[in-house]
Length: 404
Ligand code: ADP
Image 1 (spheres, protein in one colour):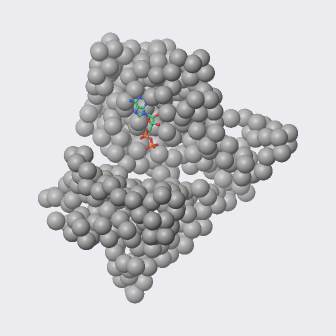
Image 2 (spheres, helix red, strand yellow):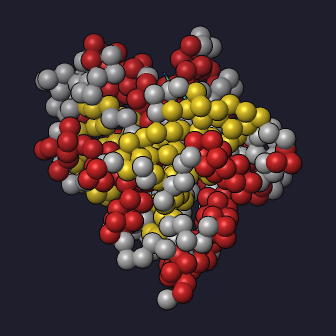
């Protein structure tokens, strides 16, 4: 059976999934895997869609020293042991810049354009591009598709796309892009099947995982996001502070003598729930703790979600539904309950029983705004985009494109 490989490459891990293409272009997840500890303690783990383990094996550092090597090992395992040779590969790529408002078939020209965006996402873009380049070199005829975290938000109006800074910086790419776009696109596509009227309306979606953001959807299109130029802005996250006065950054530089890379590490790794609680970046640990700092971190998280909901409600000029998704949003009834209380002024009333059993609709029938829990599926979104470009795209064969 034909399959599609979905790749999400980070600094020290490559996550991958295999989807089988069934009749009428339906996709069925077959395998989830990841190569962790690249260049440190490489380990390949994979399981079938039903959770049955398929592999868990360690490799010497020399065998998996970088992302291309990790791709080669994982690809070899799929091919030699499972007899799986995907007919196309979809990649998660964090930044599509100002121009890419949808997924794109990859060729050498696209790779060069995406390389120019490295300055906008230096921590992610190079890792996302590494497997693309190595597959292009080793399998030049294998169709590849880039799916961007920013693309879904390119529908934002000019005002939402700007900071109040001189135009020349906007022109060179300093814009409010927004991220988690593949997750929001999945929710926007799924919502009409759950509640057709709601899908057409004004919806606030809260993607609350280790990264967290919120998106305002109008008629299934993104009109505003809590994230901006980078994935640092907006809500507090596991280890990132979310919205912070730039004056704090200036203080760190001028008074604490921190370099740009110190500040970068601090903002990406030491802040958020971890920094504020001093305990953990994992919401489960904070909820289980009776330390007052853990309680403060949770209260701050919930409070900022409430503030940002007000902002997005203003952008939408009203709210017809609220959706929770991602790790915390899908799994923590306690956090949803607190957020529900924070949104009471909007007319939200949660149903405690439905909320505690993680039902799809968790608000009471008399709630002015229905509240849903919709598990996200960014990998399926990538597989669907890849398949649709494979079936409908102009030419998905980079080798053919080059020859043309
Ligand atoms: P990402 O894909 O960004 O790594 P996820 O969407 O998988 O993140 O979310 C991971 C986070 O979700 C964890 O760090 C944890 O804080 C939170 N989480 C997962 N399950 C639960 C739970 N049952 N209760 C509270 N938080 C949870």
